[in-house]
Amino acid sequence: MLKEKTPEVKTLNFIEEIIEDDLNSGKYKSVVTRFPPEPNGYLHIGHAKSICLNFGLALRYGGKTNLRFDDTNPVKEDVEYVDSIKEDIKWLGFEWAEELYASDYFEQLYEWAVKLVEKGLAYVDDQTQEEIRQTRGTISVAGINSPYRNRSAEENLELFRRMRAGEFADGAKVLRAKIDMSHPNMLFRDPILYRIIHSEHHRTGNQWCIYPMYDYAHGQCDSIENITHSICTLEFDIHRPLYDWFIEKLEIFPSHQYEFARLNLTYTVMSKRKLLELVKNNCVSGWDDPRMPTICGIRRRGYTPESIRMFAEKIGVAKRDNVIDLSLLEWCLREDLNKRANRYLAVLNPLKVVITNYPDGQTENLTAINNPEDENAGTREIPFSKTIYIERDDFMENPPKKYFRLSPDNEVRLRYAYIIKCTGAVKDNNGELTEIHCTYDPASRGGNSPDGRKVQGTIHWVSAQDAVEAEVRLFDRLFTEPFMDNIPEDKDYKDFLNPDSLKKVTAYLEPSVKNLKIMDKVQFERTGYFCMDKDSTGSKPVFNRTATLKDTWAKVNK
Ligand code: ATP
Ligand code: MG
Image (tube, rainbow, N blue to C red; front, side, top):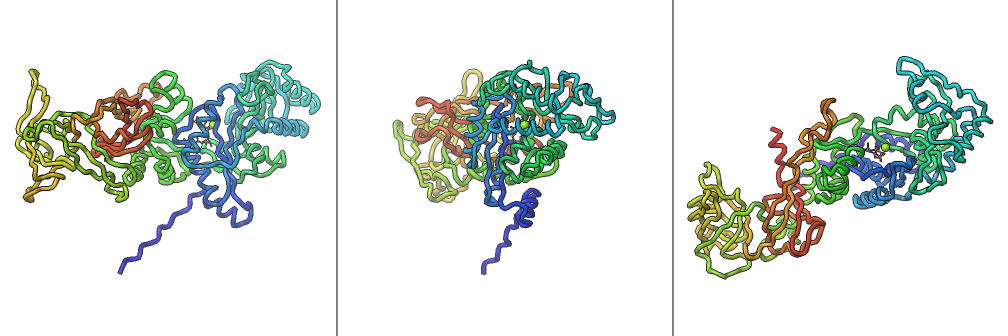
């Protein structure tokens, strides 16, 4: 009798618990979340976590997720980023209900600011931003009231109108909330709501020259869209009371903010400012350099959306900051591709082998299994001939005891082909190995042992005359330091760039790779998962190694 499987019990994360309570109590009828990127850079794997969380919750509870660009700063934003963000979200496999922009609400946000002024809750301040900063006080010392704090509502309305009309220069005035200059939460010390920026906006053009601050805009945008659960990263927890204050004073739909720990990964940086700097300083080849933690970089490297979603699920949703090991991301890729990627033979560091007793000029086709994990994947033919390439590492002149690959007078099995025996090694004048000589056993065709003799090792190979020459890019982590947030004060994060993070080699691949297309993902037997790069040409394909087959880093860490 089959043993009954224990059902898998998925525990709820804290946000799911809140949502289930809210739905059960009837507080909300359905869940509405949003993903609110600022279009000032490309998305990274941290954003992917936020995307999987926001879209995942709506899918799970039958709600919807809006994509809302937080485009309140005209200076740093660009349509290039808007387009890439949309592409990345779609690639991850999610669909937004509506594509919205904070700038769609500029008129409404302005009207609400007027309402605050009318209620005596906001005023125009003529102090410079520097003066405002200096009079804010500190945690232990109260701030100083602005000399403009007691302007009448009429005067404020008129000045605010003139700010909007473009009558003042950048920085000449700001609109501030009138709350409490000695409030223990510094954010309540008359926060700035609007500043003057005479700069063209990527969507509203020159229609506006006053722009709302994040704290004033974000909650109200959530409210306009009836967002029920507004999820953001932990550093915003001190902003939450202010988020609630605006909603309360404006008497609008009560969205609620919840915070979770941002994703940090070992051996990389995640801030858009730093990633932009890496691109600008040519430390990497671009936003989509396969070593970058950007979604486009990870995609080009060969990661699948399935593996990223699996990763987001595995790391869960924490309330406390932590750093996730990069090897977990690789583990997810292996889990996914092991079942889906077809296998190929590819030699990355070639050593020529001449099979002396194989007929000159003969070629035969051998049958190889495309994917042992997927019986529907079928088989293919691989040509075999007198001269082949094997990995340099698969031959040793003076092998240690448990070396089961090729060595003088020893046998090894060539995958899908024959058992060969090493009979000699040829060296150049410098004593460098140039080729080795072997004999093959014709009775071992297909790789079996004719007389049941023991041949321990199996290695991969490629027929020299049929080989496709390719450029293969082998990556290592981008930085040498696992915890990039903890580097010493006097150091720059760029000091820790790994000089060996990219190695390009010329490899020989079995000819059936000619059928592969750019972005196809494969396993090269014994050497890893690879993805065909967009730099490929008809005559020379380029492959990126996404990950090795085993966790080599865990070994290094030990
Ligand atoms: P960065 O600090 O990298 O510049 P950001 O927070 O300024 O990022 P936004 O475009 O404002 O970038 O982020 C959009 C959403 O993604 C926000 O809800 C933000 O909380 C979330 N997010 C950003 N970085 C991470 C991260 N490392 N882990 C999880 N969520 C993140
Ligand atoms: Mg932000």
